[in-house]
Image (cartoon, rainbow, N blue to C red):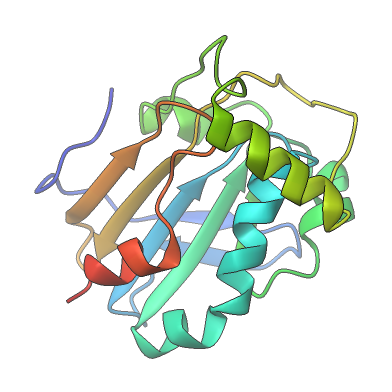
Length: 173
């Protein structure tokens, strides 16, 4: 079931791909941004996260903790997400994807914006052929405050339909 603005999420703990514990929401930050991505080698997702990485200082200054989930294994994620400056979480059984109502679509990657982002992802060298747990995933962005209240939410309609850094920052003002 999709979450809605104003809904309260019960706090929970995740284990990152580096073995650290991450609370959601993070009590030390003003906001926690849950990003649900596709498979670890997805060039579309990795291009998107490349833009977020370049803006890590701005996100930190806004009090945002980035928590990024992929429906891939820890081993597969370490190949592509190990250098991200964010908490990255493997959810190969899609437990949290189901909990937060993140869906799939046969047409996820066919939108022109998704195709262009895939090309850019390939050009930065972040692409894998192993589409662990499927290539049909849609992205989702969920912004929580410190108390776990959903401040803003976006469920993507195609593979490159998610918040850009500027859009996320608008939700924190």
